[in-house]
Amino acid sequence: MGVSGCGKSAVGSLLAGALGVPYVEGDDLHAPENVAKMAAGMPLDDADRAGWLAALREQIAAARAQGSGLVLSCSALKRSYRDVLRVGDPALRFVHLDGPRDVLSRRMQRAGHFMPPSLLDSQLATLQPLQADETGIVLDICQPLAVLLAQILRAP
Image 1 (cartoon, rainbow, N blue to C red):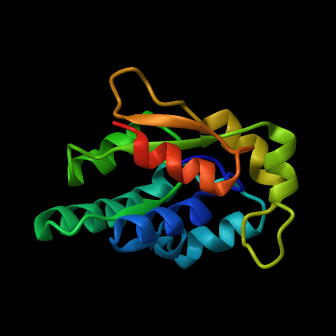
Image 2: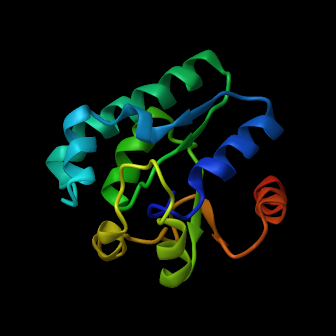
C-alpha cells in the first residue's frame, strides 16, 4: 500500500515471486472511468473507489478460499478502504511503502502511467497510515528493493 510512485508494483511483483504466489496489480482493476478521471488530474473520491475496492476484495477472498496466497498492490490510502479489503481475508497483512514527497514526486515522472504527478498531494492528504491495531509494517522506500523484500519476508 501507499501513494502512487512508492514502488508498490515493483515490490509486489518481487514479493509474489519470492513467495511463489500470484500477483495482482490493483491498478488493472480500476474502471476505465476512474483511470480517465485520474489521467485528467482529478482525484478519486470514496464513491469512485467503491467498485474498485469490491473487485480487490473479491480477488483477496478468492485467494483465501483457494488457499493459494496472493500479493496485491493497491494504494489502500484510508483505514476504511483497508477495512473493506480485510473482509476478503481477516488475516490480511499490509506493507506500507512510505517515503519523502520529493522522492515520490520524482518517481511519478515515469512515462506511460495514467497517474499524473499533480495528484500526489491529494493522495498524501488522503493517506491514513496503518494504525496500531492493523497488521502490517511500514518500510522506507529509499531502501533498495532487495532490502525491502528481505524486510517483508522477515516480518512477523
